[in-house]
Length: 124
Image (cartoon, rainbow, N blue to C red; front, side, top):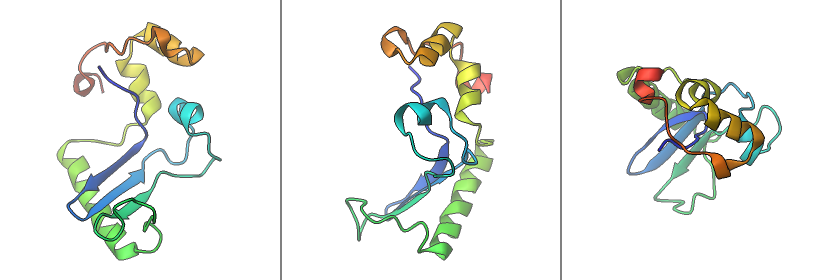
């Protein structure tokens, strides 16, 4: 089963969680449905597991050098797996069946099967 995701990439280390928005601020279906925030609001985050295990203080803006290092690490993983940061809308179009896409369009997930047209890695 393939579940909807957000347009983000990042890394999780022993000390930090880092994620950045790959959508360019666009409003995907998933965002409109579950995270109705103003345009331009991103999903960027940087958490310190040692100092802030409850993830209450986002360090994304206040730690630019650390953010840059973790961003470079994230991009390296993306290169390694040929991940171009495909937007969720494109993933939805390519991997879900027409029936599931219609179900998502009506926001009635009772008929959503989660069955894919094939392996995402092959379809993207």
